[in-house]
Length: 302
Image (cartoon, rainbow, N blue to C red):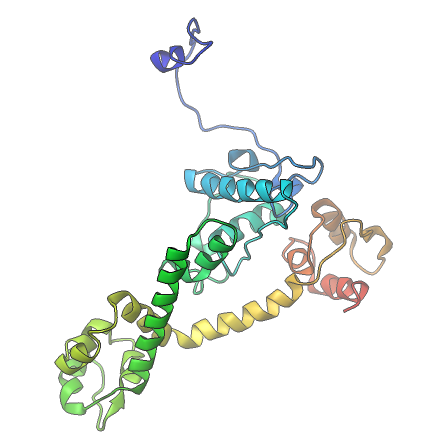
């Protein structure tokens, strides 16, 4: 540490009284921030990282990315980029911080996300590449690669949905994997949806392997996930659509909560402190009840 400090211009004669490392640090309550990570009190000032109460390099990196993007867009008079909770873990992290605050160093766990089935590592490019390209973080090659992957995935899903397999071909494999045998030709998608059967089991059938040879392994795996968990994925998509309706109802920054007599004093206090940007954000504030949200919807003309 001493040698490193002396290499910094202006610190050639510096002295270290106690070399060491500590993880204690102060922070500013992140509820003072907008979802763009710009401070509510000071225009053009953005906070990212430990100053917002987070710990860990990844948490700091993703906040720095979003703060940098939004600072650039602000000075160029463009709307901020706000990632939804259903779009990215970054969206969950920032929304948690600015809506709920934190009493201890915040770490991003998958358990904090209510849409974990949608926020998978295998579909990160499907979720975010297009947005990245729109804001200048992706070139045409990446978009072309994404479109090719999407096409390949649809080809794989169509293949599993249309291709049949005979009892003679699949029953030995079903028996090996403790899955009940079939008595007539069955769609591959139906076999793949069984919990005991995996993609590799189907590819053990030579005829299936040959017909699927023109489809990339990545697309086949993506198709397997979508087929196996289709019911759960569709259910989460429906929940997201309902939630997004609330996210689309904006609350004016100057809205006066004190004038609403029908909501509780606790809710008023929290709403005045957080100043949520949308009804959806207001619904996630601890202490704000569903009945309070209904009253806000009335005042917003909904």
